[in-house]
Length: 296
View 1 (cartoon, rainbow, N blue to C red):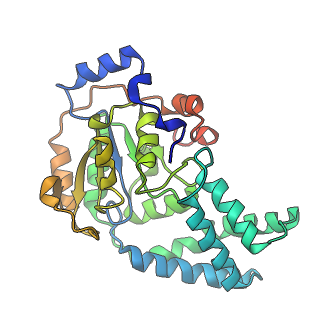
View 2: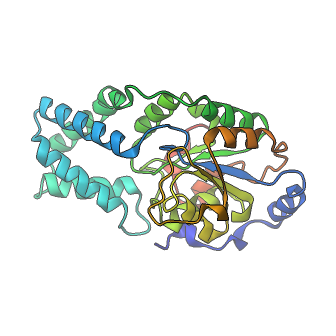
């Protein structure tokens, strides 16, 4: 998936490259990317999806929709987010496909507004119930807060298939403050999803950092470790590890989330300013430009 973000890193200004080199001895990374589900959030993805679909079906029926048709349209939209033209956000791809299936002749303004009101209400209220029973791992907040104190730019690189409210709920379940992240990937500020390398390239370009100067922390050897193709460094969190491709985890840094928190505590302070100002780069690259007020 080639996008504007597919440009090489040679576009970075020379002074930024010099800053990267000068900071290499002071700190190992210019930015740290985090996955959420199964990494910061101690939840089995299958259990989450079961709860999500059950809540959505009940809420859709209560709102007067045909629940089966609504979920079928949603699933079609989800698939579209993984296979669409490069200059289209995931949200645009989702809604175009969703409405084409739910209303084949094209939705009226009233039909579109009805769905949008329902979705906003669902994520504001019902969605939160999917986290019932989640017990946060204190190591998540410990690691994030420690790295933020050290000055590391933090990106929440969660699968960008949900609106911001859905991400906020899941961070709440993890007891992690969303304000500590410099950027949060959502379906309306991203043009690719995991495991596409385009997803990581997009975020690396927004960070303005060379891939070897970025650490990706995740639990899925397919979705999260695909960033290795760009040359990023990784830390694989093993508490809820997903390893469908039988990846040899001895090849990368790995351990429990508690292990990672201890490891992060030992990192030196970040002295690089390379990854600051992603909002301006988003405008330049036309990536996430409509979401630039988030966490500014």
